[in-house]
Length: 378
Ligand code: SF4
Image 1 (cartoon, rainbow, N blue to C red):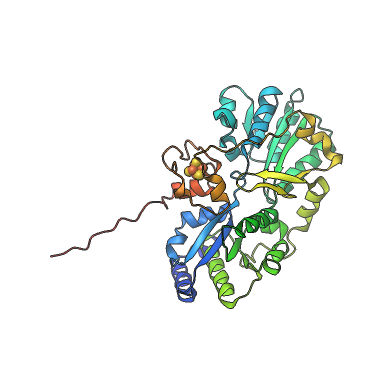
Image 2: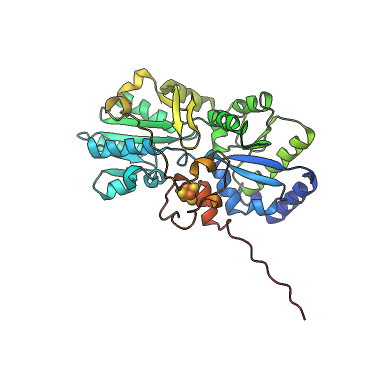
């Protein structure tokens, strides 16, 4: 298949792995963060970490949209469905994110709330058109990739005069999270560079990453989601580190430009503006890191339409999602990883989505020790 098979070629992977092993200086460590959950998934699925020398370590970042959604935001959505009898629509993964009182949207649905999984914002609009007597709320989550479709839906609802449709806006911003990670890093997580997001970058372009190279002296290499994309990006980062350079480089040139998708950016800018601050799971409250609807679209803002103030709720005490999302710990550092917490019964958000670090590690068995096979003696 064009654009897939050639990026999964095992022989080419061995060649890139050999180049990485040759060029990574044994005298130092390379700590590289893959920001995006799609890359975390690819690294686990294709065993990329196993192809790297021990001094090249991949650190998972906070770029899984479901993982960074704090409990209080899911609680708001559940309240809309239970207290206001709204039809609550959202994407599949969001349904299983643990909330307060041992609930999730899925469990609230099992107890009678009208929660519906949708594949797109258009599905949610259709539900609103088909149920004019009911309030329909779309729980809008995600980074810059999923924001344009939400903006389009709000514009459509406004154009149609759809009065029973609104969104609970939890859209968040990648560069702000990277700034927050680097603020954490001053204290505890030294990083040598970032593998930059793929899909997000098709929308925002490579330009917003330039401050990380210019101001923080951290190399960024934007990479596609296929295994050879990720490996090539790792090699490009190692070369920058070895040269003492910090630049934004683009491995994913087949989809990403410096300027990004200007039309999508314009639609988002028409509909949304920056929130003053937003609480992230793991990163705490981060200024100007999320979006809210502009005043002219206030009629479609569920937070203004219904009395569901955000209340911060601490994570389960046993859960290490926060530290994992900050790059401080690995999934297997959590005491309940793979025991009390599994993809079938997630205790924390990182075990919910296939992009979550814990779910990816668990699904592909990357946490298991490789058995030592004793050499035969005679
Ligand atoms: S294993 Fe479960 S509880 Fe532990 S950090 Fe991961 S998601 Fe949280």
